[in-house]
Length: 442
Image (tube, rainbow, N blue to C red):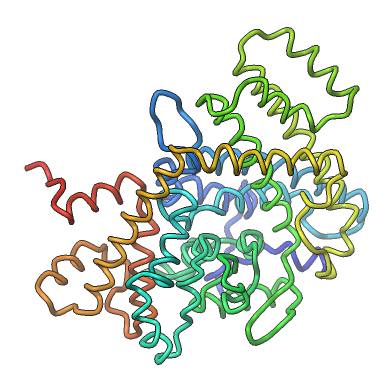
């Protein structure tokens, strides 16, 4: 792969359109702005990241998480862009715009995630794998539909669908993003048939041809044709690193604010990233601030700065491997031992003490029940569209979702599109109304 081809301003859906208008903003900055002002992005403010949405203490939701990932992604992209320019002085590639590309991709990386945090993805998969949705498998496969798209449902693949699919009444090309930004979002660039039963793949069957078109144009290496698999687009590593850095470190800060982690333990976890000299300097700076939350915020910022610098080094040291499609794993896994071990310790602690906490589990349990019920209700409606109750339900779904598609695969996708786009509050409210627990105010 080569940078001149990889960094492209070609827009999906506007391949044949010659735009003579000049813009003050670059094409990649326009991607960023387009996402910021979009409805799906605004809805992230009411989608759970990890902890239940606002109580007495405000913690991260999908919106604040995405903004922070975008900020870290911009730093990573700008660092790498500067280093690449030094290394390839005469290249015509848009190295100076890598920060904008990565920050836009980071904004979009969670757009397709359903309500109720990571349990939302699992709830959708479980409905089709173990729940009542499993009865539809033979019907979908008889039509040559890809059943694993449902049983291994992946929010990342759904983000690509949301950005690329021409929903009814919308323009060709969806969000009409640049090829480079779209490719930067695809964390697992292969079909669900290669996911091994895990929720890790890059595109549904419905977007496979379009992604292949983008990959071919950018010169992304194809590793397998059937099932389809590509090498990772190089900037995906930076988007992934920004996400890894933020959710791991910010979750510890949130847990501290919610008193799930003591100040002493939070300090211990964050200080473990530094060697003795840097640790002493940070302890000295901590003595200047008495507010405990500010102390943790300072350490969090220091750790993020360290991880950005180290991930930049790993990327540059492995540029040739990345461009050849042979780099394996994530940038985080290639960090120096001390930093990598500190990150691993944080991950293990978070899983045991944070992600399995009562409040987090309560959200997951509620998510399973609500999403499972909504999927069952609306899939029954698309199977029996002539029934009176089904007609009422289908009238409830906005016209942009194609519930009258000719294939069952597409009909199921329309239901998932509708439900995955809901906020936590909207999904709960609709659940209440459909079960009769709550009624609309007249």
